[in-house]
Length: 165
Image 1 (cartoon, helix red, strand yellow):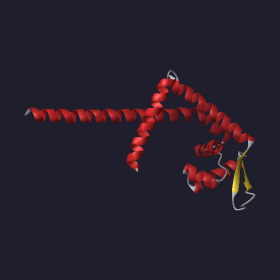
Image 2 (image 1 turned 180 degrees about the vertical axis):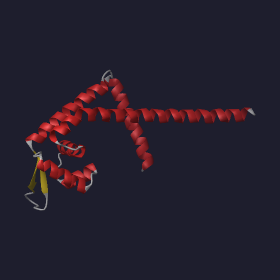
Image 3 (image 1 turned 180 degrees about the horizontal axis):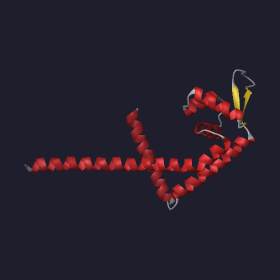
Image 4 (image 1 turned 90 degrees about the vertical axis):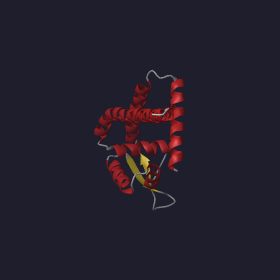
């Protein structure tokens, strides 16, 4: 075998190894996300059971609060949940007393969603769980490390987004 052939085989092997490392790093990152989701679910599930809520309903409550949305259409457009899921979930939240629906004063075709005191209680409890999970996740990680991590993740997302467009 010639030296150039051996050299090119080494180069290919090095590239394959480098790609395997990238794939494993991405896998580790994805696995961390899955583990975090499991942790959050473990802590949030008792709250959902207590109030008889499904995950999508909890997401809707949290999203209404965070994004200050007031109509089903806004939720559908911003959250990418189907109209039927939103309708069913809002109906269930209404039955549970976690939201009120009121007619828009200017356009009577539009129904505005209002959160009740009980829904804020649920949201506050869930936010406490999120904060607890965040503390578990970031235990032993410095602000500098977190800043670098966020910067790298942002760059990776931009790299992927650029190729998907």
